[in-house]
Length: 175
Image (cartoon, rainbow, N blue to C red; front, side, top):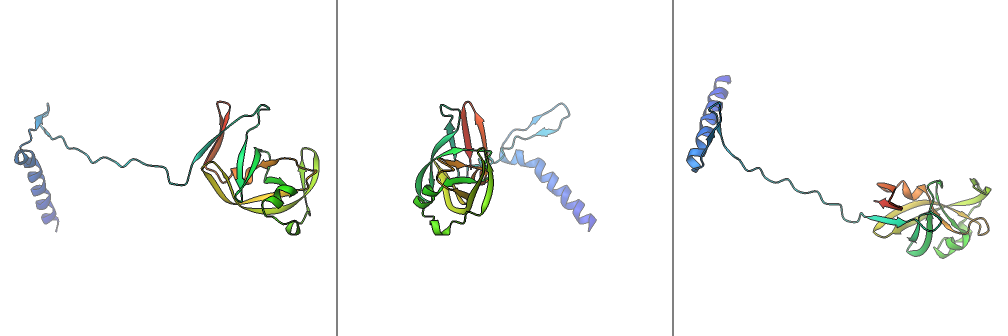
């Protein structure tokens, strides 16, 4: 078995040395008298981003906050990025506009906010979008209208992205 392998390897090596002469290519000789044959390697395919993924750049507003126009459950909502918020936070009026019924809201959870403790209800957003970024099944909290006057886009959305970070006065969100 070993003898067959050695004979086959020798034949393959002998044929390989003759290929340039058979093809009419000229081999060059290096200082060690070993023939050098130039071989064109196939090109590697270029990686392309997966369809449906994107990147959005949010410029900082006058107060230095990053905010933009989002779509939640298909409806437009202006929101403020808040990396200190565990969840996306919306008020009761916005929840109703998004199709979340007041009957479904159970304000039994207490959260700590910058203004002190507040009662909230848990909710699940079907989808949250900004530009080409689309995220499904985002956890949210709903506050009473007098406790929250803007929509906060918190970590329950941001952690579903590939990355987010500040650059040149803007916040880049990448899915």
